[in-house]
Image (cartoon, rainbow over all chains, first blue to last red; front, side, top):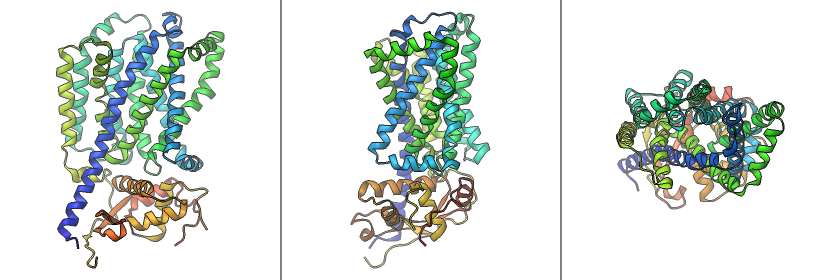
Length: 361
Length: 106
């Protein structure tokens, strides 16, 4: 027979594990998001993207093609993932629940704008600016989730989010000043891209957090990428086809004919796909604000990954900024567990009333 | 009548609570296994995770906890009794789960 005290201990252990897994998923997202920058940067050094003209919208076209192929690669990776989990039928069932699945359309649109904005910011201003701009997205996500559906953001959580963002800014600040002063005539496109990344990823998280209330994270993410690919194919591809004509299709053809680009697309699909899976899985467990803030550790982690592959050591600002970001994540992780167990500020109809032991084993 | 052809698993779990009232973890697992023709540790874990998601999101509230190895395949595992919250009913209404019924058996 298990005593009420033992049941309480087991119950608390279970709930602690629930919260711990939320943080593990968010951290996994950060690791994979950081890793995505390796194939995400290398692909621009490969033909046909390396040959894109720097003027006349050549960069923009390259960014569009990379983002489309990235979305398709992630969708393929997710379709395999959902099949392995035995959830393919659940994907179809959720898709048919239109009042639920329709929310993944704006989530996909917001995410698509964020990814594209990020890629444009890299092309027109620089990777440092793009990374810092994106790091600000948890602030938008946390505020939107709180205003829209009352997600609990304590003062401590707000402090943790701000400290993590500050750490990211410290890491990239010296590089940004050089990038901004050296930005060319198309710089406004880069700034616009940065704003798209902040608002897009923040809003995507808030919208997804709402849809995930009533749908499975693995299935929900696959629906979100289905929506993104559909928007690209139905709206953007025809526009590009008219605007850029043969150049657009030649770029796609050359990319798909290159074995190196195909390998990079596989790596993009795996890193970005599973980073997104982890992101979506963390939201129901620790909330959109916390999940996004921990995932923002991708900034320092991207530099670690790039160092592993290029052996170019990051500067002192990386060490200082990285430490600040890690302190911020500890501020979040050490928050009181009872605050984290139930994430919404909703009046409960009934609360936990008793712990019972089975008297007859 | 079964609604397995139209309802996704998380939606079905919410409808179970709406129709039957507070339920223990093992009762939800039994219902899901019967509805979708699945079984084994993987699917039991999937249902438990779904319940954790719904609890953390405030759609379900925890009413009781117990340990009974006879109901958890001999393992010493916590079983929870959950109930649908008002917020859970509100989200079901907003997402069409309250009206789009496939006839969850009472």
